[in-house]
Image (cartoon, rainbow, N blue to C red; front, side):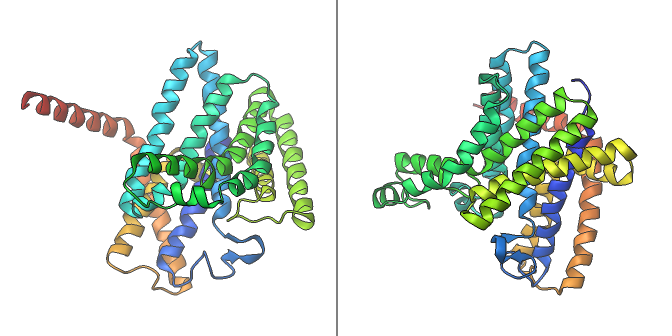
Length: 364
């Protein structure tokens, strides 16, 4: 349990790279990946970068389970594990509050429409579930129950009383009303609500159980068969009673992209087993190790200046691809510098924070 799983970093790198590549392309290009084909896929009501979110949620579930099991194996108390999770994943939500407000405005955070806050909240709940339940079957069972129940839960909230008293959008300065609204947005109504993200994340928890218990070849085979089965079920659902639809978070979408995540993970494990590390896996692995930094970087350093100076969405597709590739290279080396100097940088921030605290205390 002490080793670092290379496949987790590579998989996470694929997920975050897929998101930031297409979003960066969208920042530069006249083409809108959310509305224009082929980048927008009408048949699945999905933009081309949407799979990245599912992959990232899935691998977050893997990381949650691996991290919790390591701490339990080291005889760490459950309360200490939970407090650490609150600090870490609650920090994601707090980070999202400041980041989202700065880049997009507070409204986006309020309606729970930013990925970091959704994954942070779902990961925190997943930690609680892992600490509470011992049966390995509870996690896939909960994932399926939530996936199929969430459309009906959303329907229950679509009534005039809820809409007027606790609206989706910020509508008043009533603290109680806003608190309930944010709770409903974060659990059921928001784009990245708990009922949307948690099923895929629990799929990752399920795979992590395989990852820890099985040998490599067994893991690859089990992950591949599970992914194939889930994807087949989603295709049957799609052509019978529930179309795959990203923006409505249909159950067939949640099942299908959980299946694709299992399939992608089996492929990553197979390639690592057969060929070992190489320049490509090192490249992806670095993005995986610095995923949050890379994700924030491309919004704050590329998107926000383009928006402020009204320079975005002005270029043709070839030039947008060129600038996107250059941006990815810059982000990669920036993340590499961050990784090499992470401890010194965090120690410096801690020192500055402590100095400010001492200064404010002395001048009260």
